[in-house]
Image (cartoon, rainbow, N blue to C red; front, side, top):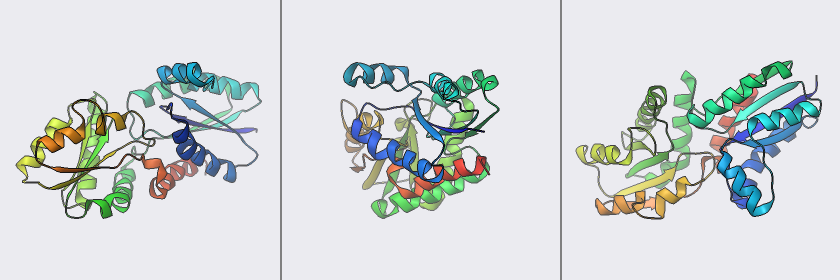
Length: 258
């Protein structure tokens, strides 16, 4: 069978980010499966449109990428998602994959960063290894996109608990979508008597527009923490720049192709 790999992310307009994050991940896959066809797809249609208008670069959506791979003779396809949880973008990706199911002899999908039981502890370990030295005796606030549904919110809460255990309860996840927003996190921090240094970082594979809400524009996370008397330190890198997380995503890939 002719094998193909599809790397799926929400997408980004930043050329440097595409090179440092997505291309780095692709190189790892190419090195392991050098005879396979590899493509990337963006789930966000607005990002695809803007990228095409700004640079002429045409990054397909999931369905178009899979159809292209079929035309190139691929009949065994493995999809690697860079999503953190199974939110809206991930569900759309899954629907697109299902719609192409009859075109391939085999389709395997490596799930999001946190999906199975063991993922919670593995992710918490990676978070501590990456951010522990920055946090010290302070607090950590991770900014996730989230999703307004019960399953996604339950995943966020379970993950926050797992990460918190690694930081003595001084770690939180705030989401842009859903009920676990920064206001609730700040309320928890105040109730628990937290003060001083707070590390804030985007909880996504690539540093997409989450960075804007982190430290730019009106009412950013940084501004709101300052207004509450905290001392924020903003880390504007995505997870994918760190080997600890890169290994977890690749582990998901290798697990489905064993």
